Length: 221
Image 1 (cartoon, rainbow, N blue to C red):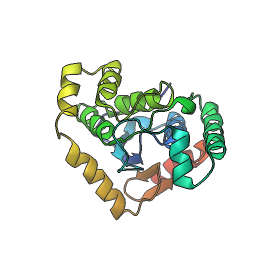
Image 2 (cartoon, rainbow, N blue to C red; image 1 turned 120 degrees about the vertical axis):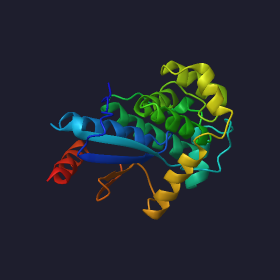
Image 3 (cartoon, one colour; image 1 turned 90 degrees about the vertical axis):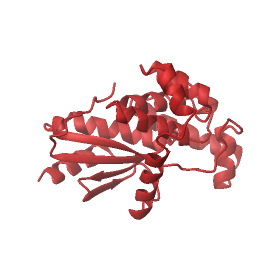
């Protein structure tokens, strides 16, 4: 279950969240943040905006390596150590009610997935698309970089196939993704998830729920 965020523009708090759709800590951070919002008595006054961040903008579009191979190459560790990293983060995700099947994950370039998230946001449904893409990647082994797989995932989220196909086969929302990434550079964001509250308060990483609750209260004060 995840929080349905308000689209009310008469708000008192704006929270921007930079994340990558295949970042395991981003999904964990998303759940913890949602849990904090559920305990925040003014959650209907909060506008949450999902921002794009690519952990590996040079990744191949299609599935070419297993996640174990990606981690082994990136961090210079053995395949056994990489598998252990996956098992560790999967156990933490399970504590947040998330099911990670990382041994079957299909990593790839996330640029088009981020474009779809911006498309959904333009319709006031960005939260639904982000949740669907993350769930499908971590739980259902969605090949995140493959256009047809993205279209299927978006349709499952309730978007029209023809409309989604037009977006995928165009350059629409490319500028929005690049704008998010450029702003991340200006803010010196080096890792995700990263939360910016009212352009003043920041939270870096998948912090405990209590940290998010305290940040919300501090921002309110």
